[in-house]
Each structure stands twice: as C-alpha cells, then as structure tokens.
Image 1 (tube, rainbow, N blue to C red):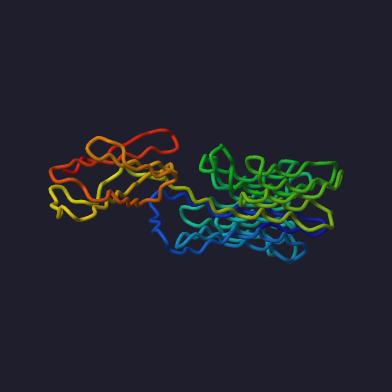
Image 2 (cartoon, rainbow, N blue to C red):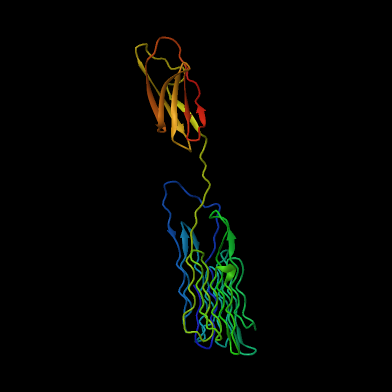
Length: 323
C-alpha cells in the first residue's frame, strides 16, 4: 500500500485502505458470502512505487486497498490512487497525492519541490478520517491522515490511519512524519538518525511509513485489512404452543390420546410439562423444540389440557388451554 525511497530523496506515506460501514446490508440465513481480508501492500524502494493493498470484501461490499506512495527516484513522484491515496514523494521535484475512492477515504498529501535550506518534502498518506498532510518546508516528515474510530468490535478502536511521509534534512536530524491516529506507519527519519520507517498496524488497514533520506531499507508496508460482521440477534418471543389435540377435538372413548407441544426459546434447554385437568401428567427435561407425550385412554367427558416450558433462566411460559 505504501511508499518508496532512493538515496538523496524521501518517500511519501502509504494511503490507508478504504473504510466501509454499512447498516443495511441484507444477510440471508443459510446463504454463503465471500469474505476476503486484504493484505497490506509491500513498501517499495528505489524507482518503484509502493504496492497498493489488497481489497477487503464481504459479499458485494468492497473496501478498496490503500494507494502506494510515490517513488522518489526516476521522476515517478505521484502517489497511487486507492481507498485512501498514497502520499507524493520527492526527488527534487514535486508530486501529487493519490486520489481516494469515493466514500471510502481521503487523498494523499502533495509534495513540494526542493525546499528552502535543502529540505525534501514528501506528503503523508491519506487516512479514513482526513487527507494526508502536504509536504512543506518543515524539517520533519508530513503526517499521515487521521483514521476513523468505531465501536463495532465492542470496544473503541481506530482504523485506516495514513502512513507518515519520510524526512530528509541535510544539516541535521529530522524525524519522519507521524502515522495517522497512532496506527499508520511512522515515516523514516533523516540522515542524522537513519531510523527506518515502520509498517501500518495489522488488521487496521493502515498505511506504512515513507522512507527517510539516505536510508537504504524499503518503506514500511501497509497493515492488513479487517472485515467485521455484526448484526442484532432477535430471539423472537419465548413461547410454547399446543399443536395437538386441537381445541374441541372429539375422541372415541376407547382411543389413546397423544399431545404435542412446540417450544421456542432463545435460552435452551427447557423443561416441558403437560397438565391434564390441571394435574401434572408428564415432565420432559432438556426438551427438544417439539415434545409429544401419550396421555392414554381418557375417561368419558370433557377435559382440559395445557403445557408449560421453563428455560435455563427459570422463566416459565404457559400455552393456551385446549378443551
């Protein structure tokens, strides 16, 4: 996803992967859905731009991988387009940050030409929450765009931070640009320390840091994406229903009578009891969803029958009475 460097120049930060949050995607029971977690793009070096990250997919929802940072040698300074765009690099010439996918992220920061005092000024990678910082005459690298904070996993987490741009300053040490929201990769430092850039945080879809000046190692790779599926569970209404015998059903006096009840519970197992003429006649522990019992041959006359179910929370429901 992310960025590159060649000696004497500085690399742009990698763009974050695209961010999609849908509250209306239909999920049909017993259906299959394609789920793909996009891999982070490998940081480039020399004249090669950083690779774009892989797309993350759930069904027809596709979050586009982040854009690689511009190559900082060979005149390929522009950042790549992606979910969020890669930052532009600088080899003495300016570049344009990569564009973002509509509704999924923000553009990478632009870079300036050779700056005042011998400063190379690449842009930071775009993030899910804001665009990458454009390069200017700062001695440190430009920061990656901010990520987005969300609670879908059950706790507050940040996703899709842009990678910081690298730094180069001929008269001393200069720090690389900060990764967006603490999860984008840190840009490589200038020649005073030659600190290497870092990768974006795994499973956040964040961009990697751009290379600092005169550092031979590759740029930081992007962090892998993540797919989180969460939907409300509706347990329905806890109930028990007599399905036989039917109300007002007539039996021959010599016929053995059976009774069946259907149970719906979100907190099984259940204990099902049948009451004939208000007297307990059957108990079934760890009952399945359908329970059938034999009541035998009943004496002539009218009778009443109802059933109860008690679930694992000790909640009891009672069926309608059949006569």
